Length: 270
Image (tube, rainbow, N blue to C red; front, top):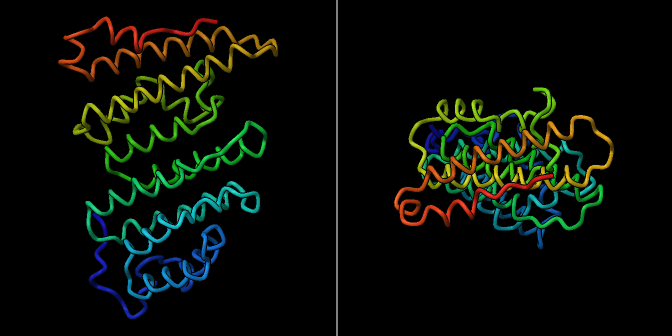
């Protein structure tokens, strides 16, 4: 449950971040350069901090596109994730569950919607930051629907190498999580009241991820002796989640099951 801001202590900023006296102020100074008007952004955020208004602070960060700067070269992966993790602390200080969920989604979207062009090393690092930042938010949230949505975003942003099936456990935590038994156990742990449309979006993200893995493996000419095993595992994973996608439909599938099978069940074969 979110902590209410109604019991604000003498120093409102400590209601927002309980790390150091000026942690929140230093954070907005780090984020400010990415905005169109750094001085106005700092003033807006400082006002929210002084008023102990976490929701207003987050809205300012989101509406000004402040997190985009964390993807730049001047910030390492760890630094970007650490700064973004501080932002997630404010969600627990919003005091209204519905607003908290709204801002959580908006915060994740503010990261995911940043366009990163190209496939060079710089672009790959930026996408890795995006995925890791949303993963940090995922790890700190407990609401089942939020976690399902965030996981779908993480999968869509992740590099295909992080999704490869058929490897030893521990090589890629994200790939491990997409194991059917592991994901089903996680979903049960998060909560049973997850709408079908949310599960469908997650399963579709996994199917898209497996398509990317298969495309990557099709171009692999390194002589990897485990390639066929990885291809087989990716195809099997895709087919299982295609069936899970279909299972989230009721009337739609009964009306025209062939169309749904053609839409989702075509496999990539290498």
